[in-house]
Length: 126
Image (cartoon, rainbow, N blue to C red; front, side, top):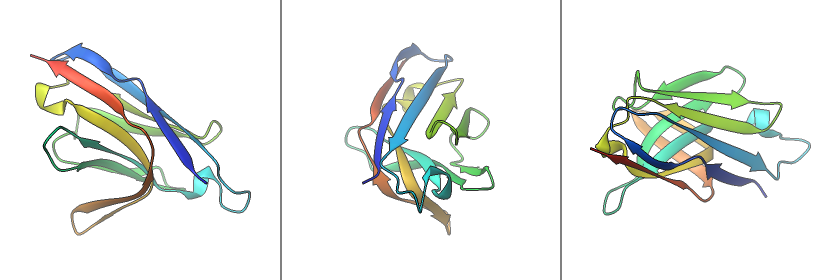
């Protein structure tokens, strides 16, 4: 069973930066971490889930939501089964619980995520 654990959240002032990490485990020998599309989504209280990014396995091609383009960078470390999300120029509206996810897709402008674990809270003060 694939398990994902996000970390690195915290409280930061507007304009600041944070780097989120996500450790993945539980992959089978036949279908390992590097076969999964990995992504991030977020959810703020009282709001719907928002797709943030999705990286296609084997290509390192990442799609980003318009509201994070130019500010967030996702990366994947296949040697450590870990993904990161470098967030810069943070805004108060970026405050949310951030989740990393496996088996993501981005089709017709919609992100979908199949597997995720516990998220990490990001709070941006104005």
